[in-house]
Amino acid sequence: MKQLLTFLMLSIFTLGCSQKAPDASKKEFSKNALSQKLENEEGKSITVQEILNQHKGKVVVIDFWAGWCRDCLKAFPKALELEKNNPNVDFVFFSLDRTKEGFDRSLEKFNMKEKENYWFTSGFKNDFNDYIELNWIPRYMVIDQQSKIAKYYAITPEDPEIQATIDKLLK
Image (cartoon, rainbow, N blue to C red; front, side):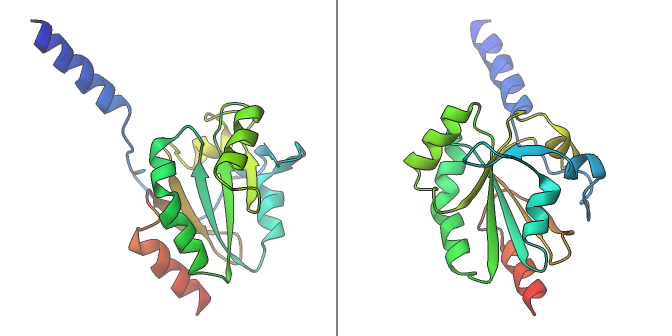
């Protein structure tokens, strides 16, 4: 009986904590998603729209991560390799660390200070993350030169569709 209960508990936990691809890929952001506020390293508030405006005309890869996320940390070497192999692409990092102190600590600990980093002060549940159906990290999105979504869903920087999308956009 004890083994059955343990099996059931593990099954429920596993089902509730897995990354599931969204049913449909979105091609652009909603107004609510674009108005979502984040903070930069200095604590200045900025919207997703303002971040995308700073990169207008460029291909952007958004990397969703957190310093507490084991899968994110395992993916970092490949994410950095993807960035290194694509010098004409802007990489932007959206942190889901739980506190500003955690965000700052993660940037320092994982040598992220030289990168473009933002933090969701509202936490995991917010208009942007709800719109893109973010249910797990890491997650990667490719944004085209007009700030439209070119690659909606990737869970690893090694996903060949990320590079194929970048290559297609840069032609």
